[in-house]
Image (cartoon, rainbow, N blue to C red):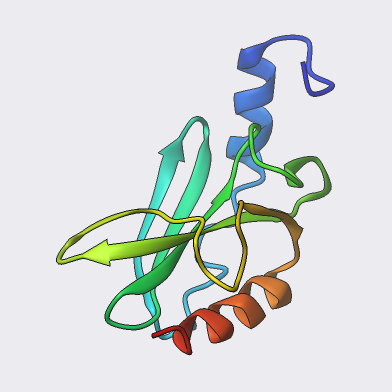
Length: 112
């Protein structure tokens, strides 16, 4: 189970290693939640229609190395859903360092 004895041990580990406001200086950050499957989620709105959901949890690609997973999202008013139909990616992107997340956010800003 991801190198942990049980789920409780796994959740405790992620609680102790929270990344918190690591993206606080990114201008398109619109929300942060620190209770997503024992992990964290940041939501970014990069332009009128597109943004990203970035997660760090036991179930995200790269979390064991302290890295992030990003999914491109499409907005419909205040609601959004994952989209796999952009030039950015046709899936989620895992194993990202903070700097790589920011690079992808800059690319999403240019999607029309």
